[in-house]
Image 1 (cartoon, rainbow, N blue to C red):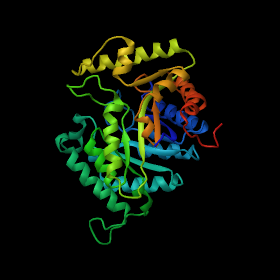
Image 2: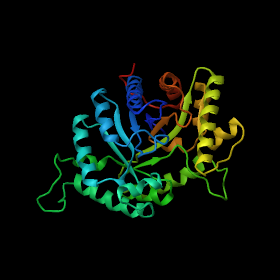
Image 3: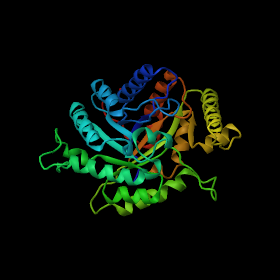
Image 4: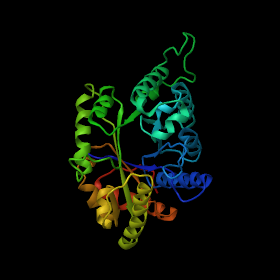
Amino acid sequence: MTARRLGFFSRLLDDAPAGERYRLATEQIVHAERHGFESAWVAQHHFHAAEGGLPSPLVFLASVAAQTTRIRLGTGIITLPLENPVRVAEDAAVLDLLSDGRLDVGVGSGGTASSFSAFGQESSARSAVFAEHLAVLRAAWAGEALGDDDNRLYPAAPQLGDRIWQATFSVSGGARAGAVADGLMLSRTQPRTEDAPGARLDDIQNPIIDAYLGALPPGAQPRIVGSRTVFVADDRAEARRLAERGLRRVVEHFRQVGQPVADGTLDDLIAGFDVHVGTPDEVAASLAADTAIDRVTDLVCQVHSIDPPHPLILRSIELLATEVAPALGLSLATSHA
């Protein structure tokens, strides 16, 4: 399996007030559509502006849908334990109609542990609540009764049952997603174990992909998002300067919250945070060396945690589409500029 489609991902972290973050992220998605990206994904975060700028991804994507025509719109992810699953089913059904069938629904159990209490949940119970809420979501989209025999989802949305994606860090999570033919969402980075602190990201994620593919029902088509931190610039020195600023800012944030991470040279940070940064040729070579990317159906690129200024995010989108994607054999929508 080879990477076929190019996507864009945002946590809406531009250095601006919330309303401006939403405007800039919308402009970035419109720009990605214009340059042939196949999908755009946004993350959900509650309360903590430094971690993510968007508590209501379906509301935001409804606005984006009105300003785009082709690009697929996805949640990456909705923290399902913190949501009423029937309301998620309803909102997603309406958004899918408004967007002419362009919605993909990524879900997961994760999220900042301290956020759970505000929603009447315990972080320690997230896996069990996630499974329960996901079952309700499936039932709603399948047209099953909800609490009473007369309660059926309106508007009906059976098509969304085939557009669920599950995010996971684990082999068992990959197998669970595969067993029900959901899509698999792989993170841009993930924790290393104490016995393998220098493990490559693809060494961690290839077993997850193996488990997913092995669990797929006969005839089911794999759907695998591989998210990666990618920042492409015309000038190598500028790309590295911005990478150093952004990555050292993240290191300092982790220190302040009592989660120290390994420091070192810029190249140490690039490796430690699984970053692909530089000129188009450098980024293409870096991504080509990632063996997990060879196996995904969708390479979805984000600039976090470099977080360069907005104009350079737009330029990175352009360079990804015009130079990196062709070098990797990724497909672009035929209507791109």
